[in-house]
Length: 255
Image (cartoon, rainbow, N blue to C red):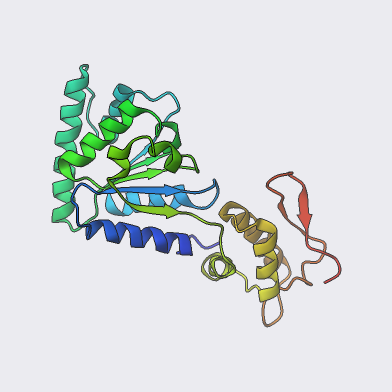
């Protein structure tokens, strides 16, 4: 399988949101909320952005408290956390300012990305700490969750007023699945097998990749005719497991 990042419709919406934040009117409105079910590519997309732009990527923990959050942030900033909370905050702010200035000079988009933010989105003290950091240096901050984050944030109007973009990751479209096969699969695959893959995976990225790996292995063992590997070629083959039941899904014998 080719090691290529696929620009799905979800990724394009995320890119558009990131561009919109650069052009925002209110300087303090620099928070982006990204949510959606697990397995739709949120973490992969944001981790890639973090590497490309040298942004800060944190994974929130269920038991996070403000001091623990700042300790994790300072470690990502390659700083030794001081003991006092005020000192932690001052050092984090100072280092973020330096990193942001370097990013602007290099024409990169510096941001603070917090994955698994559902864990902290109802914690007023942590959210206020994040808001302070974001406000004081107009730092783009991306909160990534799995469905609860929007609801949880409604109790903090001082934070929701600073959210300039909401991006919901949806299940992949058939065109997204086709793009996965075109960009990553090392054997040619016919449209009927792509359509079937879209159906049985429910458009979930993880399952699409798993199914593609099976299809690719089969296609390398049994090279397809012109036009690509078809549903008929793979009749009876196990292609993926059902996400809800764990049961094997086999390509139907009769097409």
